[in-house]
Length: 298
Image 1 (cartoon, rainbow, N blue to C red):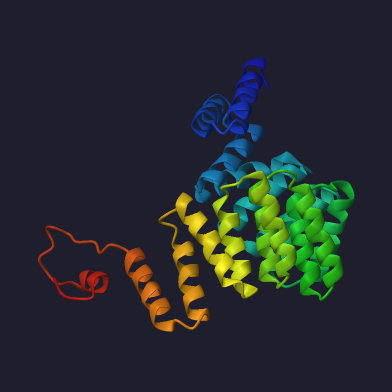
Image 2: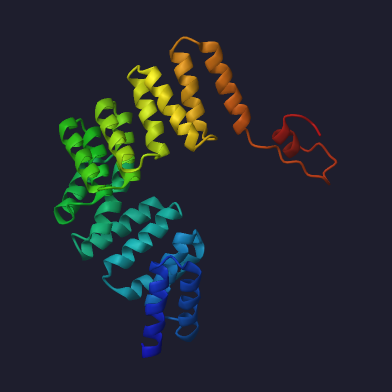
């Protein structure tokens, strides 16, 4: 590779990593115009196109360059991610496994393979893969969160709670991530532990609406409707049109015995969030599409 192409690829990669995707794509294509079979440019362009959702071209590029890239676990993982995005899950799993055959502790392969094995219900394999990853990268938020869910699915509740605590610690001062752990705990029925995390997120970001909404949901689950109502009022000040808030207000009414008003509030919410029918000005016939959209003939 010439010095000029190397410089271009470095510029493309810098733009790619800086989220300047159009600039990066132009540079990668420029390299390929000069050197049509440049493995690195094909690989990087394919990875970028996967991120943009252009799966067909991405896979064509990967399939051209992947065999020429040798035992490269990063390239195999990027190819696997493209395959998964295109719906070819089994092939993606095979590629992640191949990446691990090149490098037995490659963290990207360990994590993504664990995620896919969990989705298939293979919790033991998920725990094994994540255990290997966490031995190498003990502060990974996503791995701890996934580890906790897999442990919980196997009934190892104390170990799962410890994993969730580790995930919350790995989140540091990121209110979104802390709220995410709290939401998982709430879903699993650990109301007090979840509330502690929502409080922590709100101590970092006082008007963090997702944490407010989840805190209200946790208070409703605990039967503390008055407190939940106050939290929802505060959340609505920051996000007046958020449907989740209105839905929880209705839930409080129904749980408190005022079913009629609760149901009416839900009906109003459904009406408010219903998609606007699409009317075609030049369409004079009551075709089946128009009838399905509007519920009546035009």
